[in-house]
Length: 400
Image (cartoon, rainbow, N blue to C red):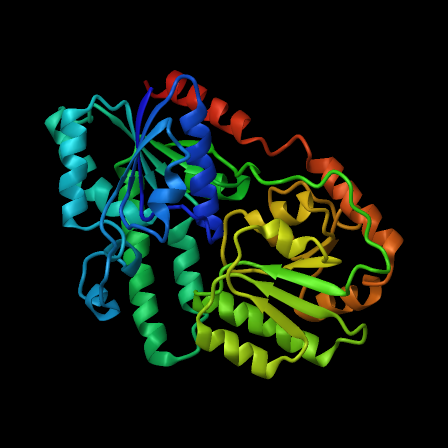
């Protein structure tokens, strides 16, 4: 099975959840005995070439690093993320690759490479009398036509909200076109799969939830020497993620009887970092890190409190397999297999999350029991090898 995998930017190194999903999917595909993999990254990331050199089983190509004006994207037919991902030079490169190689499948990773489907997929279908020689697979990370409009409305500033609502409309329109031109759509969770099958009953939809390729801590005991640290890991470049973090920190400022330290780890602007440090004296920030295990090694609890963001929260798996008890919204742990009261704490709002942390941060027996239950419940459920084997089998049986 010869696959061309197209993604908006290099996932090396994987500094955000979507890049981690992409990297580990590429890794697993490249290791499959029946797959010959070629990867095209539209935007060259930092240290991408050296970091990708370990994957000798895949042929990897990089477009040039993109520089573009946010204002320019307003006048484009495509949303901002697409404008900064795959440009006309990339489209020409991909066309040449399709002509000179006998690909069975083209994987389009996320809506941000939607112009590939629109500029290439449609035309190649027409060339082959309605169906392209190669089949097109849309790798969805979220149902963007649901997520993006919802996220845009979270912006408080009026004029910026108008711009974001317009961009979200373009994002929705682009994703719907991608689905229309795809032979297969993957969904990252059962909930997303239901939405796609409801809205596109003629599409082949395959559930491709994330696996876990990181380190697993098989033994850990939280004791009195473990600092009272609560972790929040993620990427905080998006305004929605920043606003969400600020709501959590505000709640802890009002209710922190246990004197916990909130450790925030993930990419953010220097301006946002300094603002948080000035406003919230009980936090520590790690804006850049290579190994999440080192970030979590001395943590007592972790928070997954996100209502907007969709999909599957990969950070939940980091917490589980590093044996960190999780406090989360119900929708934030969809697909994880965690059970409230047995393997995690489910809460309804940030105030309740603070109360749970204050109540249990020093209940060491309960914390250790909670992370043991979570680890044992999920240990054998998140194999990337199994997921890719199922995907390859599905494509062979349903599409080829």
